[in-house]
Image 1 (cartoon, rainbow, N blue to C red):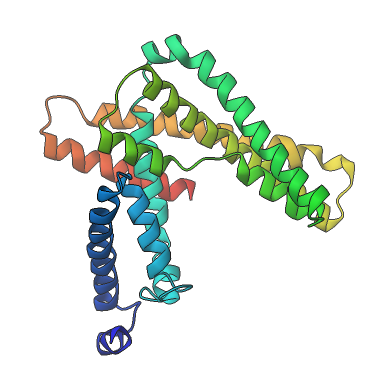
Image 2 (image 1 turned 180 degrees about the vertical axis):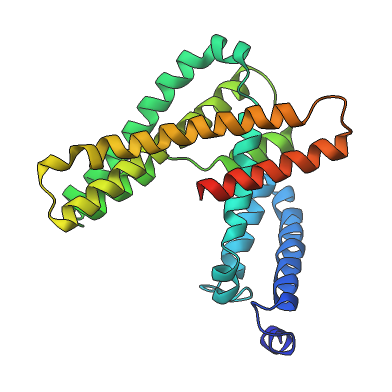
Amino acid sequence: MLDWLYNQNGGSTGVAGILISLSLMLILGFLMTRLTKLLRLPNVTAYIVTGILMGPYVLDVIPAPFIHGTEFLTDVALAFIAFSVGEHFELAKLRKSGGKSAVITIFEALTASLLVFILTYLVLDLGFVFSIVLAALAAATAPASTMMTIRQTRARGDYVDTLLQVVAMDDVAGLVAYSIAIAAASSTLAGASGGGTFQVVFLPLLINLLLIVLGAGFAWLLKLMTPTSRTADNRLIIAVAILLLFSGVSA
């Protein structure tokens, strides 16, 4: 039935096919939340389960071409999620619990990466390059589920502030670790010598540092262009435009 519907509307990557797929994702995701609500689970659980079931590897309701053709939506969603997390980085809160959050982040990221590396390289013998990349990926967390659960439960307090700081710092640590791991893996596969330390270690750090500075510049521009004298609609338009611009530059 769905294949026929897609074929009648230009395929799953056509305009009509994309709209149909998005509609199915929203409707089925909402219906699944009715079930998870009875089980006292957060809505994000319903969205994840729905995505797995609808994907091309289970029921194939949403075909693979649609997923590959709309990958940019992931970048856009992550940009908005990261922006929402950044809203909680207030100087007063950082002075209060920033040091504690940094310590938690360091130990959490290092422990996860070390355990994954030991499991993949020493236990499963998957190879050094593959293991180091997986270990770097293990350092990061998924901010989307955390943010959605906090919004749904309307949680507040010191614990939430610390949690959001750890999530944000953990993503930064994961990005830096992944950049270094990819550079090290590429050098290893290319047979690079030890003289490539700058390219393997310092260049990824420099790129991430420049992106942080660039993000601060975009934040200053956003503040400059959204004074309180502007209407809420105009400030929203400008904020979304700058966020999309920075997301595109960083992609």
